[in-house]
Amino acid sequence: MHNFKAIKISENTYWVGAIDWGLRDFHGYATNRGTTYNAYLILDNDGAILIDTVKAPFYAEMMARISSIIDPKSIKYIISNHAEMDHSGSLPQAIQDIKPAKVYASKMGVTALKDHFNMDLGIEVAPTELTLGHAKLKFIETRMLHWPDSMFTFFENDGILFSQDGFGMHLASSKIFADENNREIVYYESAKYFANILLPYTPFIKKLFTALPSLNLNIKMIAPDHGPIWRTKEDIDFILSNWQKWSEQKYYNKAVILYDTMWQSTAKLARSIADGLMDNGVEVVVMPISVVHRSDISTELLEAGALLIGSPTINQQIFPSIADSICYLKGLKPQNLIGQVFGSHGWAGEALKILTKDLTEMGVELAAEPLGVKYVPNENDLIQAHELGAKIAKTLQQKLAEQNS
Image (cartoon, rainbow, N blue to C red; front, side):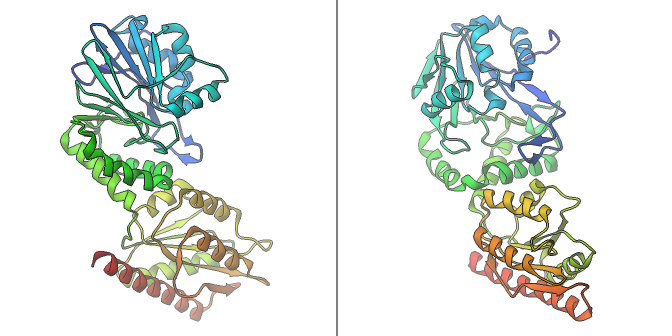
């Protein structure tokens, strides 16, 4: 492991994390581009401070990076900003090997870490401020962003906000700074991360943005625990403005059509509904569940204003694939959506009733009437599907006009 090197990111700070090129699933979220587990090392004449650790299998890699610049035993403090195992998995081993003077976490973090590892690691509640030699740190509790224990650490000397899972993304890259990576990829992966991890916690995110000015933090860099580091003013403004925008969950002039199909009847309805939306000026993303992932659906919904879901009836139920996606979306709690349900059935049409109940429970405002077709849609059925799309489009545009007035 001697070949792994620390990467300097500021005058006093190094990245000592790990790149997970092979990760493709993060508890139900498709991580098609892998991820990173970012850990950071602050150096001072009086010792060093380690900010977070890495997922347990990558411990040796983190230690090799630390060892490339200092003796790990010169680390005086370890800070745990977030107890989730992809950031704390190496913590017990690090404490055992390094034997730091202190290990700090938030109040809830102390409890969470004890519960995770079923042992008392001697972790203490972080003070409001901490000084080691010339290094000055501030600790800011950010509960429910996105766990109860979540905490930010601000390193005043270099103006770095260590934001744990805040402002992060799942993206494995040999380029650790956001400005070095493809902008479209960075935008998509940060949006996907927000949509699949942070969306249920938008009320807390709004509170964070309300509180930030009063904290008087001279932020020159944002260093999250996943994905690239934001080091330019343009990039810091980019991620902060997008998070603020996404947290508002406004209506957008886009509709997402999610469906599964048995004998292509529901698929035909989906295409006609899409055509009705497009003919009336609405952007449409059609997502056949057989070829898309649930986490891609939530990503598209982040900047959408309408959700239409279609399913045939099978054994008096909706398709299992559709049930999976609805269960996932319910947990993410998207807001400000209109929509409707559609589908084909044979001798019974229970799917529409189930879908209607599901969308209602999600808080989706149902526009028009549900569209159910027996067996194979005829020309008149497809005309009705087109009209359903048109009606949804007109209702969505009314919502947009009200929102922008």
